Length: 346
Image (tube, rainbow, N blue to C red; front, side, top):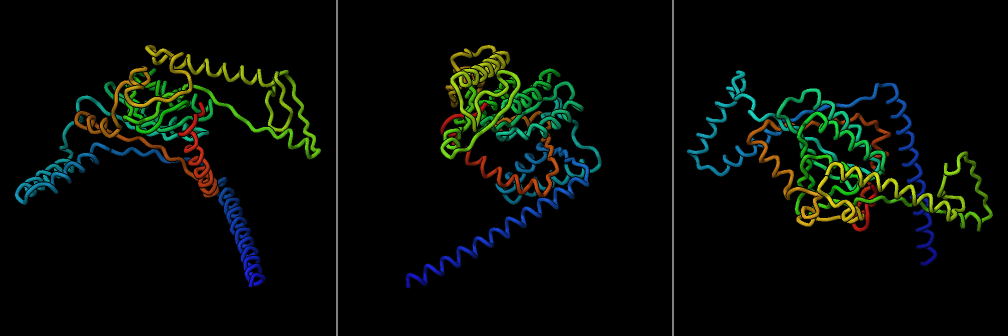
């Protein structure tokens, strides 16, 4: 019986391995074909502008309809029909006097690939912005690569330089590079348990030198310039290498602190630039945020006096890239769970 089960499992394992091999090969081939086809087309994307004012007004109307009695419901229906006819004839109410609120979303990944969409969205807003217009950024990210989030913050500065009021809303997390973006805002509004701060820098790499040495594998590296390469993954790291690497990390941290201080002048930067995160009132007390609230609160308030428009740029994604993104998303979700229990990249 034991021999039979062993043979059964052996056959099943071989079948499963063959099946996986075929699936992987198919995915690989589909990716090659998709990328080849994609190269034949001009890359691009789509800029969408959605009127959130109308969407929110429809929600309010629907709630009123559901709660109203029979007679009241008929009156509401007539009022809505009259309003729809007026809009159809171009007799809708004039633009709300206090301007427009443009809403953009940034849900950042480690490599900050979303910066390209952010750049296009901000460019589109700047091309039509008028006096009295404002921007609401709904921000959610634990940070990532230095150059990526540095560019994201620079894009937001374009709004400030054109005197467009920028409100940053943090419902979940704006830490490390995310806080670098948030500090650009004229106002930072965070939910009670949103994580903000983590003004620090993290750099870490594995080193396989001892493993290679144990297996008699040599690693050769040729550089020009004393500090072209300091810490390495495969070579032997020295104390001098570590000291230089630490110096580089400290320099980046100093730039980070200076940048935040320039935009949040009331901050005691040395007290908050420890890599820690804060929540709610603690964040307000330290000057990291301005008040407690959610993006939903801000939208409900804005719709009373402004036209609220969501601006969203969606890049065209090739099939091969979609397959790669699925793997990337799975890895990033695992990393994000780890970051939320430890530290964030800047």
